[in-house]
Image 1 (cartoon, rainbow, N blue to C red):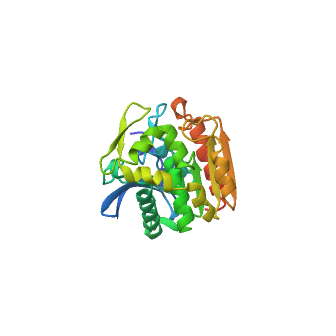
Image 2 (cartoon, one colour; image 1 turned 180 degrees about the vertical axis):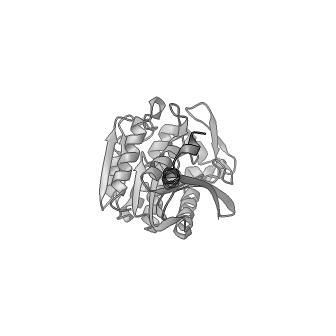
Image 3 (cartoon, helix red, strand yellow; image 1 turned 90 degrees about the vertical axis):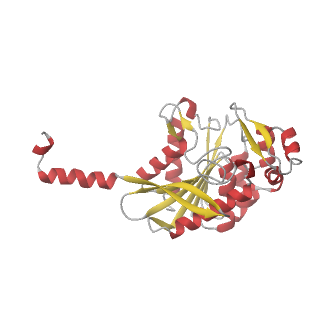
Length: 290
């Protein structure tokens, strides 16, 4: 009854405002090496916007770790905050993770790099976004992948590495144990069980462990001359302190190193403050280039 009394012009104005503020999310699919890759494309209303590719970490999925205080994944929240700032985003599940095809045990860095490279091609061709302005954010192992696609393709006009793996042999010797890496180099096609600190096990085959020794993200970023935003946590239990500085030292171009007293999950276990601050800092860094 009350709504019926609102003057027509006011009602129309509210409708237009609502449409302008609306962000649509759509599940997308694209093929890579015979596997179906699944992602979530988030698009703010209006003209096609610059777009950010979000790459998840080891054992993660496209929505990423849930923040207990708000029951929202870190990448879900990042996509929403990016949309509020006027940016579209695509967050994908790597093969064997989330809803994408394949088995996690077959995961390799090279497979993830191929998947992310195909995502760049998908975004360049999609009329719903501005494919001439693509940025990439990679967290942890996703940062390893981001450094590779930035250096190899030259497509991202800006790149953010959130607590990125810079030296896989160091990071995964800490996470998995040097003995597990040695065993993994002999496991062949039989998946090796890897008990995780969080109370569950993951399984990987020999090719993954071989690529731990042959993949060098710090060298990949040397070829990338675009703007680079790097975050580092002083309390990070997975990435050695100083890795962010190594990425900055290897890079030649506009850059910013963002250091905070945060753990590998950006203090998300206790709230959203650090996550929100980091996303805002990333957006502010991207703004002149997108």
